[in-house]
Image (cartoon, rainbow, N blue to C red; front, side, top):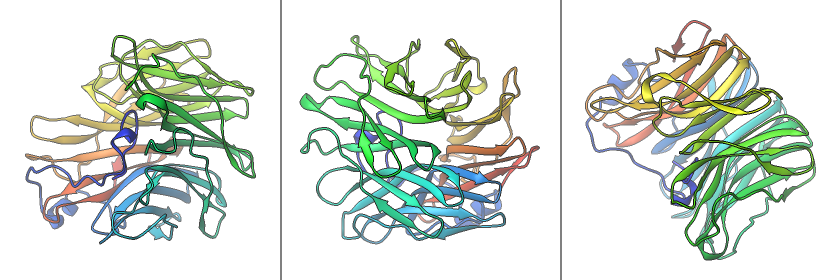
Amino acid sequence: MLARGPAAAVAGLLFVLGPAGGLPATAAARALGSPAVPSPGISSSLSAVACSSASNCWAVGSYEAQTAQLNEALHWNGSSWTKAGTPDHGTAGGDQSGLSAVACTSASNCWAVGSYDSGAGQLNQALHWNGSGWFRIATPDPGLAESGLRALNGVSCVSRADCWAVGVHISDRGISRNAVLQWNGASWSAVSAPDPGENTAGNTRELSGVSCVSASDCWAVGSYVSKAGTERSEVIRWNGTRWLRAAMRGNGALSGVACRAAANCWAVQGQTSDTGAVQWNGASWSAVATPGDAQLSGVACAAAASCMAVGNYASPVGQLNDVLRWNGATWSAVTVSDPGGTGAGAHNRLAAVTCTSARNCWAVGSYWDMSAGAHRNVILGWNGHAWSS
């Protein structure tokens, strides 16, 4: 799968073929709840999901073909998930394309972003859905031409003529910097953004997600390396004119953000923590307790008192899915299936979540299929009472 999230893009485009531990065979894994969704290619993994309505959703990621890693997009029409055609930046041996995030404002307007490498280093990519097909749209590639690293990890849109994409690029001395691109309805352009931390060789900043509530109010989250060498949480805000750094206390990378209103946002931690969520109340960000010491990768809110966060946690024998639910007062764990099993060496991964209402959410990711030696797509649905495939 394509690297995604804080500091992950630095690893480059790499389809990870998973752990060596034993897992159930494909048939057994399906009996455990693996969804009947396409898993194209030799190996496939989903990284993001977005819906414009309960009957129109897109899940994106990448899959491994015989000679190359290709973009992947699955569409939900209200009754089933099907694979849609997507352009790629190359299908020759060693070429790699992958999508890390997706956002939709309507059934005929969606953006999916990520990165690709067809021999000239890792570059940004953006695909646009116009209601009939996905098309490549040119994006700038800030940073040093010879650096070999650019990646877009998050995207958010408030209209057809107003979108933001965030990620990372490398500048001089191997320093990773925040990357922010804006869509104005005609083209993507690079926009200046704060770069907290020290400008010393090898230091990193990276934005993992972005969420907008209006044309003059967006939040982007990620991480940076402090002067002491510690990875710190990073939050920046768009005020309609420029991006400004916001106060945020906490170590570790923020992996996703979701805003319902100007005074109501959630971000989640990408590493084990008993305060894995932080909340914006209109005045400040504050840490909120979460159960289970999960590594959270995505968050979505249908209402102020109805949010879902997804990720994983380590059991004594393997990696299991984790879903937390916010009821307006506390986060609590929700039962969720593990299509890759729960035995020794189990490897399950939920990467992202979206909700159109308190009774309709989708979570996507992958699990490791030992019998095939490959990842398989996972899509789980929430009906207001339970998660199921």
